[in-house]
Length: 274
Image 1 (cartoon, rainbow, N blue to C red):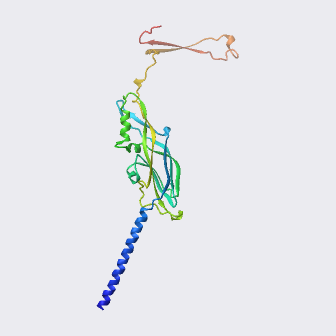
Image 2 (cartoon, helix red, strand yellow):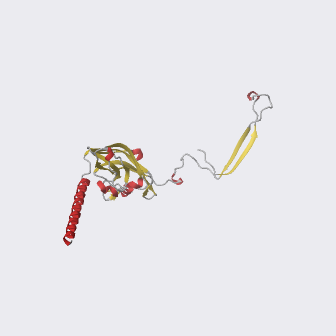
Image 3 (cartoon, one colour):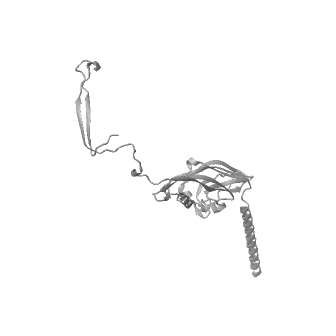
């Protein structure tokens, strides 16, 4: 009985070992498949086009310096394209402000997110976003907020001026493989998309308007040809006057006599005639 028990235990151990080896091989195979899931890319395009009428940033002036960027929105037009080689498909795409790569784009403001789930992706989009997102973005070690404020304050606060600024942008897509559309896998776990396996960069321009200091009533120049006269007494006199018979219309006595208004103004000081 003891030998039979030992034999049974040996069989169970072999079975457990075989199961573990199978699981290990499956895990390795799955890992290799996961690493090889990205599609081969035939072509990827990101073409950003400036739209000056929709890309104006205004900066306020308190009379001494430019202090802050006014709220608003800016934007640009973009051509976005990812052409995959069969059996690839485009799973998710995004556009970010600034220059970033792959999943590192997660720290930049995202201004577009879509889930194509199709073989190829080729669209034109008009992208619009709040100015605040631009101000949060960095160009190298400096934020666009600081770059804008420094350029505005490089000129005297009394002079309104404007300038063009070039902004970096990034397009990134995540691709996968599937033999047919019915086998497109669900998107990867997690709603946050921080970039994918194919990334392209481009730039667009904005116009920054450093507006002048606030205008006051005292700033407005009076008409140099107008003489200001202050009156202390203003009298009105009403009187009637006769109209010649030849100028009258209709029977005599059926018309009201016209009124004549005479105005007398007494100025506070004599007015010199020229």
